[in-house]
View (cartoon, rainbow, N blue to C red):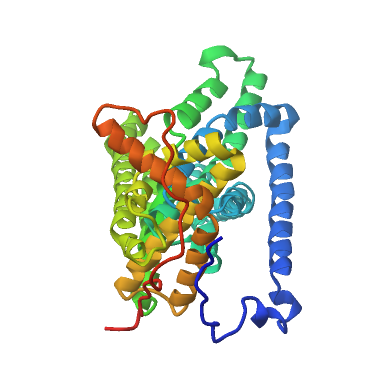
Length: 438
């Protein structure tokens, strides 16, 4: 079997060596354990608080109704992330943070602020309105933005652009809305139990229609603005400190403003809610959806433009950059690998596609002078990952290229046709960029 050309040793030594003499609190398992414990405790506390306000029966009803939009929203954000899918652990953390930590912070802070305003003004109704339109948007958006900030700081390799910011922010907000919907739906069910109402005219039905049917995207829409700010900051160079700080703050302020407008829509009259929904929420949702899809297509174009340099060096086969820059060809390649080699082969091809996309993004950042100090090391790592998976990936991608060519002439590949070659030794050194070279 052909082997990959040797690489020079990184000056800092093998990965992980720096942590050999690290303090115990700097070890990865300690950080993961502390974070998991924090989220678990937050979950238990928020569970007790919601159950106390709704009752056991109301909690179960609210839970059953609130969970309905969650799979659809998570699947939508995962679909957006298909070009360079991030690890599931980031999504699990984001959802857990939104559902547990952010929801707990919001309930405690909102309750405290509303009671303080009511005491200071001696007007409880005014305190509720002010709390919903001013306090709640600030507290809730900051609590949700904390998850995006943590992934941005500590999972920097997984946070490379706008789509990553949108996905992390959207999944965090989905978790937050899930917990909030349990509270609102459970409370509405308790109100119906006391009044004896049921059916489509009940408070539960009205709450379900507004929060789950009409506006399941409300919280994700607000927080996605923060995610876009972090995503643009991720595209900035390491030396652009002001931009990397101001853009996330601007996104956070926009999220707070839209959230405040949504919460205050009832103050605009009898039809204020529907006016805000039609005039602001739906257009904003459409605009952001277009932006994210356009960004995804731009990412695919980056793959097609940046990877041909590795074809010339022999690391990729001819046609691979174009197959990797097409979601249809990627899917065909995975299906071919699954048919020929089973799930492990399909998984290997999917990983190959993800690493190749990361390599293209890394190369573009290097070409624009925005790569970090570990550019060369990261490039070698990605090339090694690709080289180790080429046995399944290269024939599958070549099959996708050939299938597209046959389809262009209105034919299907013959049943006996096989992709050519399984790859060979690169004939030239991999093309290295010096990100600090002018």
